[in-house]
Image (cartoon, rainbow, N blue to C red; front, side, top):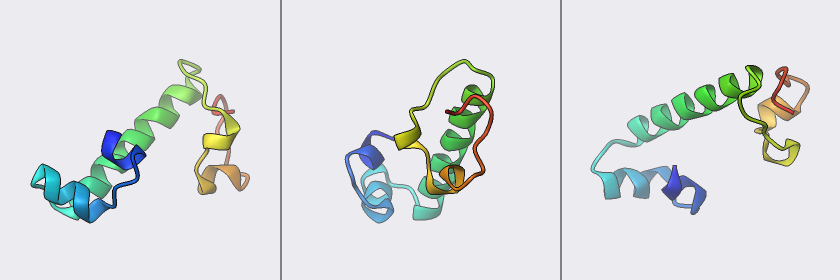
Length: 65
């Protein structure tokens, strides 16, 4: 996640970690799912400006605001 936040593309992250781009995408997806699950359960709060486009288009999940 650190490399993603730093702005590296999937291909470069995959190369650095010796993984495939598909693995990077899958892990990021799993992380995002866990993050929003924690928000729904009100264990964490995610500021609206950090929501992904899909969520901010009206698919907001309870507790994710």
